[in-house]
Length: 116
Ligand code: SF4
Image 1 (tube, protein in one colour):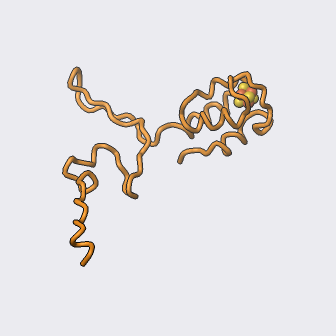
Image 2: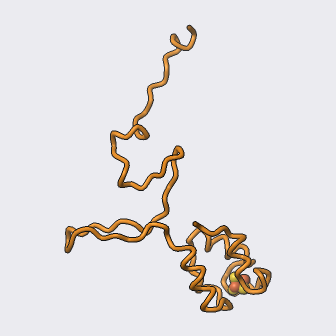
Image 3: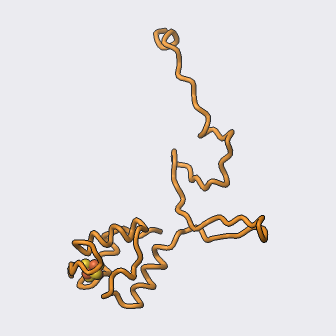
């Protein structure tokens, strides 16, 4: 389960209230938000203990592990990505096909049908 910025902030130095700006962000919470979004590394904060860095990295790791199918130039690697929810159905990219009901566009009803 992905961590929220507020959960990450609690694990930062001084409970996320140090705000030293050495990571390049104005506050620990701003750092936590970028970390939660996966935009930066935990190593940007030099005050984090190795134990907390490992804990955060594991918690923020993508839920889908990388899997490689095939060998050589025919190898296909999939995973290490977030599941994207769309229309309350998980979308993984593998399970959807172009003929899926999600990709078909419904034709808008004509005005004549709406007036009846
Ligand atoms: S370097 Fe660490 S303690 Fe300093 S503001 Fe950034 S996250 Fe907070």
